[in-house]
Image (cartoon, rainbow, N blue to C red; front, side, top):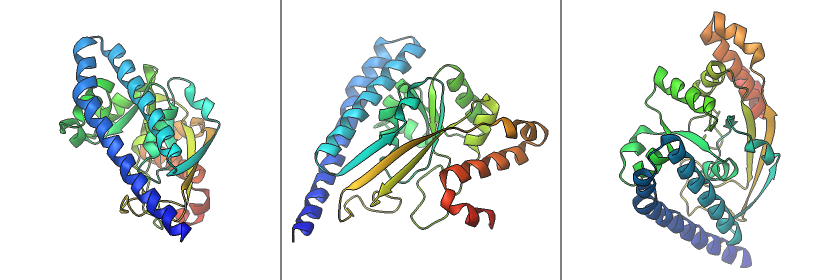
Length: 261
């Protein structure tokens, strides 16, 4: 009985959280970010201010959903994410992974769907913060490299999107090419969640029997030195080799299945 009541409460609390997040989005989209774009003419300063607003807002939101009992979390080595100019690669489990990571990383940039840049409810934040749209092609990689060299940290999920539970993760090559072209050793972050919810294909109201518990572990930097020579001689081979190593680090329990594909 009490278990059922707790689940019902968390379903209502999750709905409240989504409502608060949507309300904040509308407020910042139509009032805060247009003001930043109009008042701050210097592009670099504008991006820093907008990204700091997002960083602080996501910190507050994470604290809020923790306080109302939807989830709890712990971090290991999160101080390593404070250094500028990092390429941060993480596995992608749930809808709110990105909210957590942006709350941890100051001056963070991201790759977003190009359709969001045309959406009236999202374009202001994306433009003000200078996020990169995934239009594809060499320009995407150039934009990623440019952000890293400017001192921004770039957060990428190599899977591209959330991997549905029970399916094999498939890594896209953009993260590997960015690492090799920028000559930046990626910082690896392993995310776990138990019990898992807010996964791909799941409804927000499908809450688990107890609050989600997230662990964010910064595994350290992955050296790209062994792969640079391969990449310079045979780019596709170098990218595949780095992809296998990134898979091994982020999904150690699935390595055997990956190598048999």
